[in-house]
Figure (cartoon, rainbow, N blue to C red):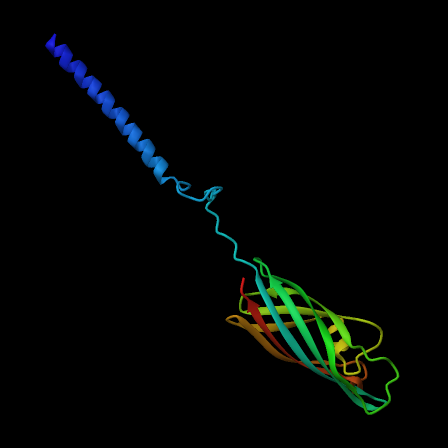
Length: 200
């Protein structure tokens, strides 16, 4: 009889110990869960995916000095200032826009017969490798007329400029020559671009 009592007590002790162990394990798992102690509404990340890098936003200015020869009367010049705003998404695609405004000219050695354009709306597209911004600019004339210096010749049909990135700035100096059938009417556009990345 005593032997049976001892055995029964041992079994009860083992059962109790097992129950305590399970209770401790449950509390430990609950305590170590990622959402414990997190703000209300927190959801634990799943899938182990790498978060996408944030979009980059760049603002800046392109300053252009243009000149265009005319077989009938010499060379005209104009100056332009273009404000640019563009975004680079996580895949490296560039989108944005800007406005080009006439700051000087036209300076021509003859009487001009057509109105001088004073503004272009700029469309921006392209791609980024991280080290270079390949910015494709298309100039859409605002109003009627021409640019006697040739800004429209350089950008109206679209042109890609590769702007080198250095830290949070990007810059380029580029000379564009547009040579028509009659080389006397060649348009030359000298442009300097400087962009700065905005803080996210």
